[in-house]
Structure formats: structure tokens, C-alpha cells
Image (cartoon, rainbow, N blue to C red; front, side, top):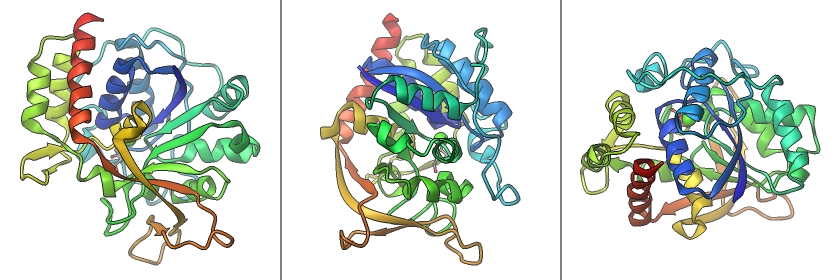
Length: 314
Ligand code: BDR
Ligand code: CA
């Protein structure tokens, strides 16, 4: 199994992504480190704990940052997309396990040391926790096997013309991460926006009897990031599933290497953009990003069906 920490801001698509990831049994989920993002930290923390126990993951949950490093004045949660609580109208049974007694950054570093170069972080929220870990423990890049994120875009964004929400919320954290020496595997808006799951397919999944049926139905109903797919079917953009898919089956995705710079200037319209350079000159601009460009939708849908089967048996 692949040892991972899930750093996230649940968040409806975060929760669906965690459901999918856990169901594959390909991951050893060592912990979840919630951060403020889609909704304020009080909600992402509760949701992280509740979903871990509801799914039977029961991993440590170590609380992360309650807002971006520098741009707290600009930060606006995405309650319009995810509801006030972050999971629409869904109410999960309240978690019973205690919170991990140390903050996210100490937990992440301890696990990185313990895993001796095998740990992968999957980050599906703003990168605040990862940046704080890097500032406190500068040797983190040498200890990680990988960092897979949902964030950014090498084409168009979803907050402004160029910027994607997770990066936009804490662009300074993202800047620290992308300059750290870690080569980030990035699932940006460029791939996520074309890989939504049709609403009728999601309805079929939640009609199959399983213990996630009601929760899945409620999550889909509460999520407003719905757009037509290339065939014109209305589809939910489950952004946060994509970095997990790249780990579940690397053959499902195609990637292209590039150098990314963050647009941190508050005076420009594209604030928060991940500016890609695919024609980098290696000696000047190191590759710091494997940009996911395409996804095998047939395999993705198959994994979703297998997910429901898994939860009908477990
Ligand atoms: C990203 O931001 C959040 O709304 C989602 O959970 C996803 O991680 C999409 O831009
Ligand atoms: Ca998210």
C-alpha cells in the first residue's frame, strides 16, 4: 500500500475523493491534516474527523492552519459551492476519537521521517500546512516520495481568468512549496474542469445500495460546481479526486513537465495564477511540476462503480 497523508479542506469534493481513495485499498492513510479553505477551519476539522470515522479509516487527524499565511484579508470561503458546513446538508455521525495532540506540520514531519522516503502527501486544499511544514522543517523535500495536489491551472482558472481556488486562497504558501525543490504533481483546473462526473451517473451510484448511498446523494445535491461535460451532460466537477487517480493508476493520466511561477502580486487581475513555462531552459528554470493533462474517464467511472461495491460490503 502507498503511505499517504491527506491534507485537505473538506469540502464536498474532498470528501468524495477520500471515499474513492479509501475504497481502492491502495493506500495506507496515515493521517488527515485539515486546513481552512472551502469553509473555515472549524468546519474542515470536524468534517475531516467525521469522515475518517464514518468510512472506518480511523486515522489520526492533526489540525492545520486556520487561514492563509498572508492574505487573510482577501480570504473568502466557498460556502456557495459547499454549503456553510462544507458538506451541504449532510450530517455525519460525530467523531469520537480524540484529535491528534500535535499540529499538522509536526505530524507531517514525524511521518515523513518515520516512512524513510516513502511518504506521499496528497493535498486537496490550500497549501498552508505544507508551507508551514517546509518553513519549520526545511529538509522535508528530501524526505518525501511525492506531493500530489489539486490546485492551480496551466490554462484557465475558476476564481478569476487564470487562478484556481486552492492556490488563490494562499498563493504565498504555494510559492514556498513550488520553490522548495519538491516536484509537485499537479491536478489543475485544466484537467479537472474537463473530467466532471455526469449527474445521472452520480445518481446511479447513489441508488446502488451501499452504506454511503445517502451521504453520496446528499453531497451531490449540496454541491453547486456543476458544468456541462464535453458531451453536454451536466457534470459535477470532483476536482479533488484527480490527484488520487494519478496515484491509484498512473496509466490513467498523462502529464507534461513544466516550471511554475506563482502570481503573488495583488495589483494584477490574475492574482493567484500558476504561470506555466513548458519551454523551460532546464539550466535556468528547473522542472517543479508534473502537470496532469488528461485522464482516462472510462477507468475513472469504473473505479467509482467499484467504490460503491466496496461500501456495500464494508
Ligand atoms: C478546489 O477548491 C475547492 O473548492 C475544491 O475542494 C477543490 O479542492 C477547486 O478549485
Ligand atoms: Ca478541496
